[in-house]
Amino acid sequence: MTKSLKSLWGRFLFQDRGILPTKRLQFIFLILTLGLLIGTTWEISWTVVILLNLIVFFISLLDLLLSPKKNQLIIKRSIPTEIERGLSNEVQIKITNNSPYQMNFRLVDGIPQSFQKAFPIHGTVYKETISVVTYETIAQIRGKYDIYKLYFRYKSLLGLWEKQTTLVLNDTVKVIPDLTETRNYLENAQQFLLYEGMKIRKHQSGSGEFTKIRSFAIGDDPRKINWRQTAKLQEVMANEYEPEHGKYMTVLIDCGRMMGAELSKGNRLERVLEAALTVTAAALKKGDYVSVLAFSKNVKVYVPPGKGMAHLQTVLQAIYHLEVDAAESNYAAVLTYLQTVQKKRSLILLFSDVQTFLHEESALTYLKRLRQRHLFLMIGIEDKMLLYKIREKPVTVQNAMMKSIAQQHMLLKKREKIKWEAQGLQMIEAREEKLAIAAVSYYIDVMNRGLL
Image (cartoon, rainbow, N blue to C red; front, side, top):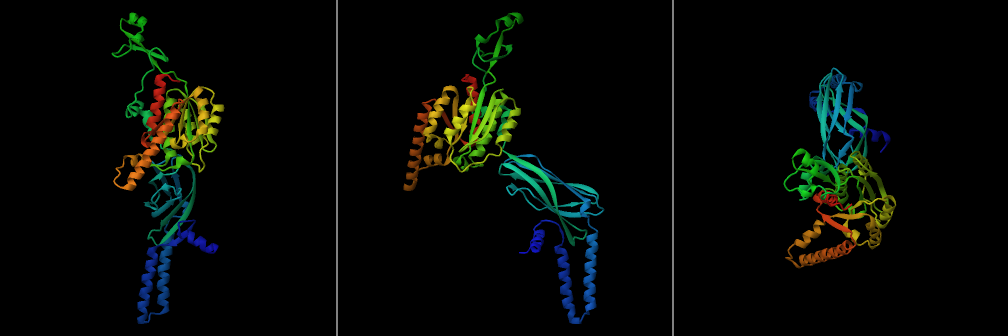
C-alpha cells in the first residue's frame, strides 16, 4: 500500500485530518443516479444530467460552508492524574463552539487499549456555546500512560459533509492499585478489624506510652488508678496507656513468577500491593516507621523507613508500577540485602507464595540470622483450587485420585510450615479478599502485645 493510500485509509479509520462525504450525501447521489438512469428512457439530454449533478454538488458545498471552521473549535480533556485499577473514573471533554453554526459530532479519545471505553461518543454543540461530554473508563493494568491524541469529527448543517481533525492533548495518567481497603481502614479502623474478630486494644497495664488521665471505668485494671488525681478530684481516676510509637516495620513484596497466578480479581501481585498499602497506612497512622522492599531475581524497589501519612504517598509512587517478572524469586539475595539496610529491630512482613518459599532451604539460614534481631511473618494467599479438591467428594476414580494428591500436597505443606515455625518464623495463608485484614490484624496484635 502506497503512502497516499495509507493516509486516505487512515482518515477513514478516524485518523489525521480531512473532509469526508457522509452516507446521506452518498445516498442522495445514489438516488439521483438511479433517477437519471431511469430518465434515459425518455432521452434526457446530457445538459440536464450535468446541471442536476452540479446543483446537488453546489448545495452540498454551501452546506459545507455553513459548518464551523476548525479554528473556531476549542477542545480540552480533563482526566484524573491518578486512577485506581478496576474502579470507574470519569473523563470530561470540554468543547467550545465559537462559530454561529450548530454541529453534530462524534469523537474517539486516544486512551490506552487497556482502558475500558465505549467509542465513538455522539453529541450536539449549539452555536456559540460550551458543551461538556463525560464518559466513564476503567483501567485494568497498572502503570504510567501518556495520552496524546483525540479524534474529532463533526457534521455540517444538513449533514452532507463531515470534517475530521486530530487534536494533540498531552495528559499523563498513573494507574495505581485499588485503595478501597486502605480507605476503609483509615475511615474506620475498628470496624475494619472487627470484621475479622480483632480489636485495637491499649497496651498492657503500666507499660507503653502514657496518653491521658480519665475517669475509672468498669473493667479497668485497678493497678492503673492514679491515686494523686483521685485524691485531688475526689473521683477515681485512671492512667491510660497505648503501644509505644516509633517502631519499625519492613514490608517485603515478592514480584517473582508465582505472583502472576490469576485470582478472581487480578493476580496475586495485585492483591499483595493492595494489602501492603493497607498495612503501611495502618502503621503510619499509629506513628511507626515503614520501609518497603520489592524484589524478584534482584531488588527492584527499596523505600527507606519513613514516618507520617505523607510517607504513604512516597511508598505508593514507588511501587504502583511493579509488574510480575518471569524469573524465580531470589530470597537469599533479598534477605542479605535487608540485613545491610535494616539495622534496627523491626517487624518484617513478607508477602509471597508460601509453597514456593517452603522449598527454599537456602533462605532458612538467612532467616535464622534475621530472627535474632527482627520479628518475621510471611503472608500468602490460599490456593482455592487445592482447597476445593480437598473438599470435593470422590464420586469417581479420577476425583478420588485428585483428592488424595491434593491432601498429600496439603500435608506436605503443613509439615514444612511446622519445621519453619519451630525456628520462630511464622507463616500464615489468607483468602485473597481477607489478605489486607490478616496483615493489619497481625500488626495490631504485635503492637498490642509489645513484641517489638
